[in-house]
Length: 264
Image: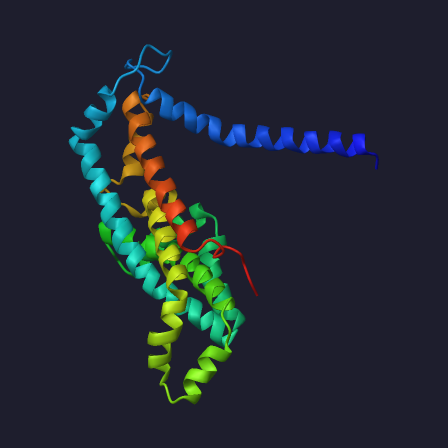
């Protein structure tokens, strides 16, 4: 291949990459920009204003939905972090394919299928009234797999001789976990918890099937608003939700930069 040919190929790759990133991020930038639009409709740009953020802070229904989302995300991420950490350790220690399959199934399963399955399970098997509890249980279910994958990846990067030496020195399995294993995998555990929190906060499909009547989360409330019209208030809450999500992702990446690299 000639130098000019390689150069043209490089320019083509750059152009394709820029086009892909523009397709992904340009709509987000438009949402952010129009959250400051001084117009009730988003048909055209009128002028800059903070009005819609003030309206958002005084919207009782929106604040209630946001409170529900934060409560659900906090409870489900804490539970998923504990259970996912246990699952990740079991997957790393025992190398049983069934464990990996059970942890990966909710992650790989289409959300609409998982939502319908959980809906039928709650109603027909558990006879559970749909509400906050059903949403929390559903979010724990699909979050465990993500935490387990992150924890397993953290464990895969450790030297197993550390644990063997601890056992040779007389440490019990619990002391080995408490003083050696857990401190070493702590970044992965925290990153997995942040990922579970973010996924729970943003989830719509599974929440839609398991919420029941009278319970609203932020994604569900936003959906009910955009069925009428996409007002600047919707753009404002979407911008804040986007900012919170990106913050959680950045924190997870800073705490454990290599944790999403799958290792076998």
